[in-house]
Image (cartoon, rainbow, N blue to C red; front, top):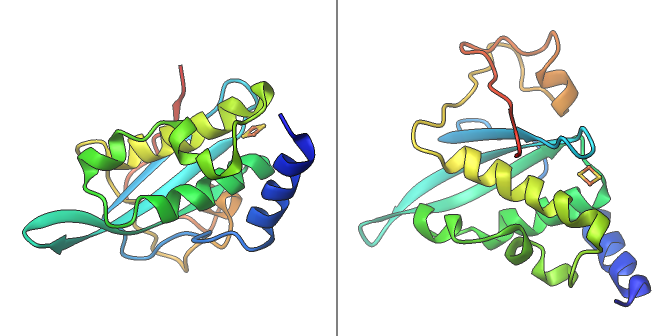
Length: 159
Ligand code: FES
């Protein structure tokens, strides 16, 4: 693998990550943690109707993860726009990170973490944490005193 090329693609992706931050009025939200590295990703999704189908209008994310996780999450939130839930659920971590090229073995779990967050958000009955305070500006804030969730945040760790 061309590591220089991979590192450049990561640098390009995180120089201007797309859709980073909590989404107000999201329809669904999901969070996962990685037992490999202790990082986590949260993803929000908003749907719209299009030709009688429910499709993903937009998605956003926050993460404690590394640069690869940020880059993959940024790509993923763009890639799933306009897809139905069923179509989005067919995407693997490998699919979501395809524009970066094959991930180095030690970074494969970063893409899987993003896939897990997406699956969590698209799972039937995925709830949205309703913030009573101003939206948290960081993922850490959202677990701290800024968050007054009406339901406890359920964090699932990947197998
Ligand atoms: Fe933890 Fe990449 S090393 S998400």
